[in-house]
Figure: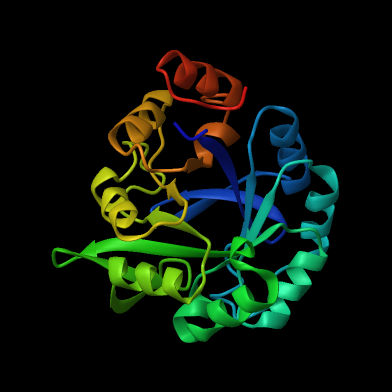
Length: 252
């Protein structure tokens, strides 16, 4: 079995890590540099850094904080928020990111994925999709879960991979922050449609949720979470020990 990755996510607004429920009602958590350092030293396999209001506010991502985070950690870093051009990819990679996550920018201009993949390689390009059920189908949302694009999610994700995205992060808006478990149905549908690594995001409330995720979807590559790690409800070490005890391969 492929080694499963555990990835904390830093949602950053105005230089602070925040965490909400269903993308609304955001509450302040901590300094991104402090949290990033903590996770890097305590078993995280990778780190995701989202400047969550960059797209909605129509501005570029904060690079000063990003640079400090990148200097602090020794694990792969994926960065997203306000990525609209190949120049944005360049800027973020030069700040120390290993991979760049694109969401609203790709919805506006799907060719951005192709251009970035050709310049930096597929492994650098991550498509992040915010997905919610609308009228019985999985629908793609833009601008941090604010706008319904009207696009069916599975076909959109497949198109992004065909254009050159080397990894997919699926953020289920329906389960985000609710802590009732990952969106197994949605994630299975994505894994069945693409042949690149898929990262599950939205819904983790306990170690058992990760066990169920990897058991029910053996093809899923990684589980991403925020609040259960930020608030110390589960440590990454405890989570990985539980996964190992359930015969799920992790890096300890």
